[in-house]
Image 1 (cartoon, rainbow, N blue to C red):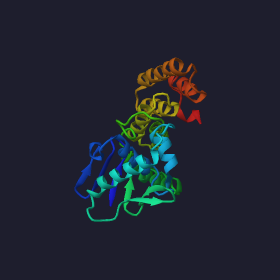
Image 2 (image 1 turned 45 degrees about the vertical axis):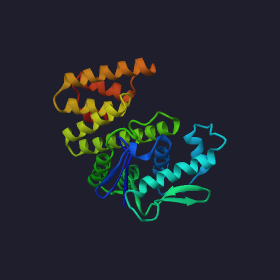
Image 3 (image 1 turned 180 degrees about the vertical axis):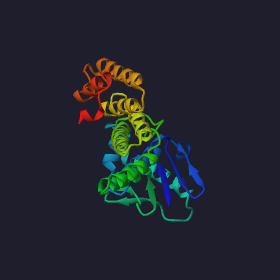
Image 4 (image 1 turned 90 degrees about the vertical axis):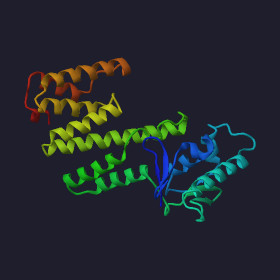
Length: 256
């Protein structure tokens, strides 16, 4: 089995062998791999779509043969992990895909765990699934890769998913009375997206519940300044209501 890690700096491993970016003979063969990995198990990527991503909508006249050359380079690189075995890069319907029976990608493990959490019947099971998913999500997606459109789109999509999962995990932990775990998830959501109001709300609530009222008030002032400076808006009504409750030290149950 070939494992592809896209959270953090991309890497490819099998058994005790690991390939890094430099092992794929250039940016384009590596980006072919990353494109195929983000699409694992869905459908073949057409050559036209891959070319559009690789050359940002302006492929060269000889793009077909050039792309096929990059795929050959990728196949040679992956073959180092399993010498003598068929290629994990399949040719299908005028396009390419990775063999889902032989390749695993951390992004899709994360998605599967989120789906498992969504299907869970109880809060404890859902929290367990979300916690497992968040343990997979270690770092910025495709860290260090060029900020081309398709990389940014995938990166932003998973930043949002991880942020939402952290907030939900924090809420579930808070419901069970685990303030420290809720605080950790709130801080993760806030760090992922400093403009995420739900993450800040969780941070403020846990600071207050943990007896750090002054820290909670400072956190509200911080997020208020951030939102005004970056977006030109005031905090949402839920955050403003929470601020009033913290200011007057009203019971949190009244915020329901």
